[in-house]
Length: 251
Image 1: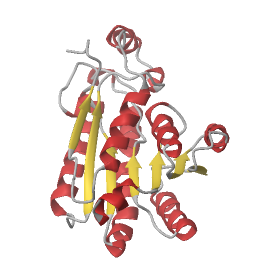
Image 2: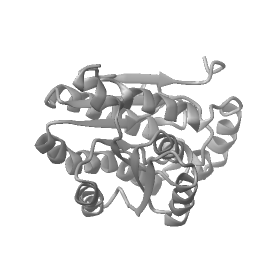
Image 3: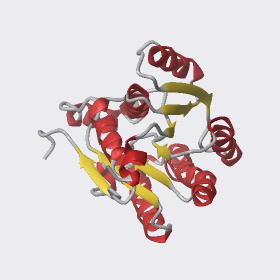
Image 4: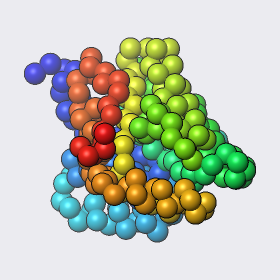
């Protein structure tokens, strides 16, 4: 086995944002269960602590450290990354997962919700990159994983702003991949319909009703966690650039 493969298969220090529910929680749980050290960030610290307790009882050899995090606060994200490096000596990967999805028609003029989506889905991603990129550069290695959406590849009614933020997430991550040193890997995972709390943030009745029909067939978040795990487990000279995962019934 090559040195690169040994490093890829070893215990990693992985930071996960938006880890209190849905895909983020599934990713954190999966990676901790595989023996990695996970630093799980989100605003709901109580949920993170529950995840940490479950991880500590699994006997996997990994660990899950809960940290309160607001990705819209640049200083908060910088402190999140810096504290992880200080405590663990390095940061091997950052999973930029935090996101919200309050869908609405443009003529509903839910401008506050648009602003919030831009803050979390785009600025939150950029804050993560800004915090981790210098760390990865100094280490000579690192892995960014962006959780985008199938909305990065198509637009649907009520999804203009949300899809716009996910197009932006895809574009930013692809630009990062092209600009970064080859020692820094970049993966974008675009989930289709997944069971999560995202739909509960929709305040427009028409959009909420449409989403209930749209989500009739949804994946367990564990499927997305598996995709993230696969990308992280590859040898250092293999960069899985993009994975699209959706229910077989989602055509």
